[in-house]
Amino acid sequence: MALEAYSSQAADSVHSDVLSEARIACYKARDAFYACLEKESDKKPTESASVGLLYPAECKKNREAYVNQCRPTWVKHFDRQYCAKKRVQRLLDDNESRRGV
Image 1 (cartoon, rainbow, N blue to C red):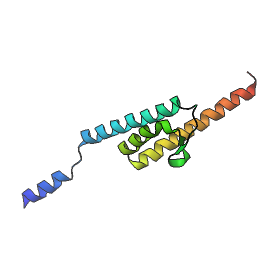
Image 2 (image 1 turned 90 degrees about the vertical axis):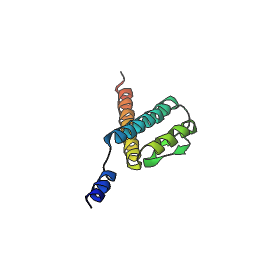
Image 3 (image 1 turned 180 degrees about the horizontal axis):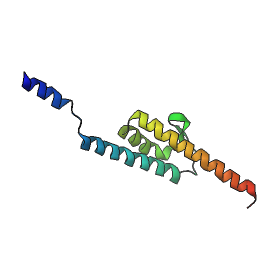
């Protein structure tokens, strides 16, 4: 009886090193995708992602790897962060051009 309780408890335990490796793999895939977006920014975006993010077809492989490596909620969160950062950058760039500097 005690052995059964121990074995079921061991099966439910979480290994932090496995979670850490998965998180690192997710971050690498995310960074590769966003690096591709920056590199291919001059091309017309033809693919659609979550939260209205558009990206060029050249980044499709990176996007698939990113979606496969990361949890869906993380992908949505990172996409929102990226879009917000780009929106702020666009506003700041726009304000610079209006100053007449």
